[in-house]
Image (cartoon, rainbow, N blue to C red; front, side):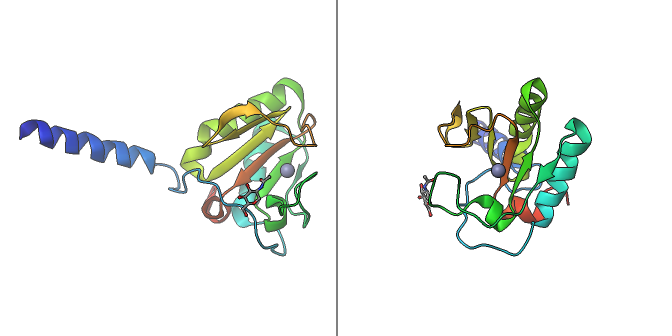
Length: 148
Ligand SMILES: *[C@@H]1O[C@H](CO)[C@@H](O)[C@H](O)[C@H]1NC(C)=O
Ligand SMILES: [Zn+2]
């Protein structure tokens, strides 16, 4: 009986830890309909990273994924490209991954590497190698709430 209570207590603490941050998690939402500009969370994410790592940033672009057919997250204004290279780019990549699941970041790409919650970090085989920019994609919740 006592044992059961402790299990419940730990389960509750664990659930609280999972929703810390803005509660958006890092689940993946594919883009399906272009919007007309950058999402508010994406603008705040761009300034957050620019302040720490520098680099020009780009958000909105109504286009398919390069070399693919699906709509790009940029077409929903939910992805930020930060023009950084080398160690600085890698630091920004690691930083984004470390806060991803607390803040609604669903994918991070740099230098032929991609991170998603489901796949972890692994080789990125898309046609654009992302050697001159870090791509950070938000899920729909993160696109509204990042940095709010
Ligand atoms: C394209 O989008 C669909 C969902 O709309 C998804 O299931 C599929 O995996 C996507 N393809 C690629 C190459 O990402
Ligand atoms: Zn991008």
